Image 1 (cartoon, rainbow over the protein chains, first blue to last red):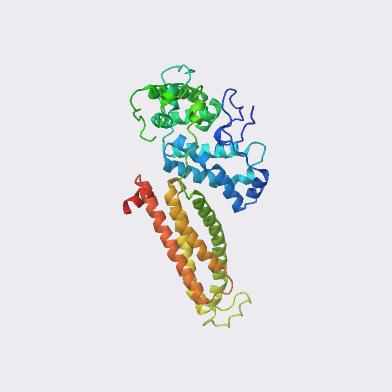
Image 2 (tube, each protein chain N blue to C red):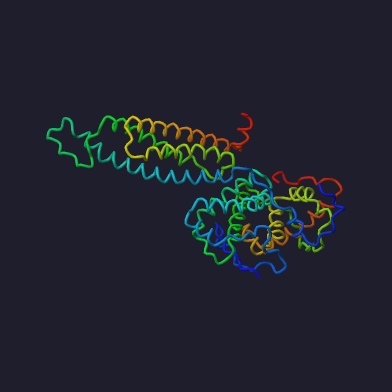
Length: 215
Length: 185
């Protein structure tokens, strides 16, 4: 079980220090260790150390932002803002949890804030009653990266964000609900419905038709 | 594009999402961040400079205004407030214009309408401004050079005001700075 990651951003009080999902993928490609000496130099404001940290994390931050926001331009904006916040707040990082988790939280906040500012967090699949959980393994088509990316892009922004945060980043429903300023039930239902929609898009013989103009 | 028939069925959504791998961000990201850090530093330095200039004006100018034609002989100004020279008199309106443009810039700036390309352009102007400020901070500047630097600073601030104003106007109309650049090219 991994230590809960403290929230460094705007939603500092919103996310309870919940445990990672027992079945979840807690680390992922974001999990890059940073030497303590490098962190210490960065905390002193050494430009070269900050640049090294930037270089280590620019791809994971950009990728996370791209998966949530759906456009490279927006992902670039999120990358820049998240890194500036990291630099501003690195003095607050206490070191009692992995640095990558702390930075990832900043990046998630920035990406979701961008969607919120543009009124796109309301863009979610409609819910009709209780949604049964889709526990079947992904279809074989999901191994086709280009096809998977098209299918993800066809989902509404909020739904895609929930899927990515849950499946790829290992956030709990409680955490996702808090991050999105919604309830855990919202996260659960979006996950259930979104996973089924993603499966349908992947199993469709034709290329998926975009349902959201933003993605 | 990989042939999906050649892949074994995957066990979990986490695996297929993780298999997408990392995307490559556009180049120059660190340069843009570094430019914004420099710009912030320069702004802090300029704020100090503006306060110093304002203090100088409040102490030097009253002496300047009172000295000629007073019924009673004006007391000698303190050693730190020497009689204004022609160069100082010429600099006063430049200080004022610089402060006015800084204030205007502060009102125009809106981080919520930022974009990568716009930040790079804004950062470039800020970096040029920082260079001018560094030159102004050097001791022993001759008055003509100082006046030229302040003039240059004002021109850069005007460019920044134009740039931020355009960006804000575009944002208010649902556009971003980047497409405009593409159209110009």
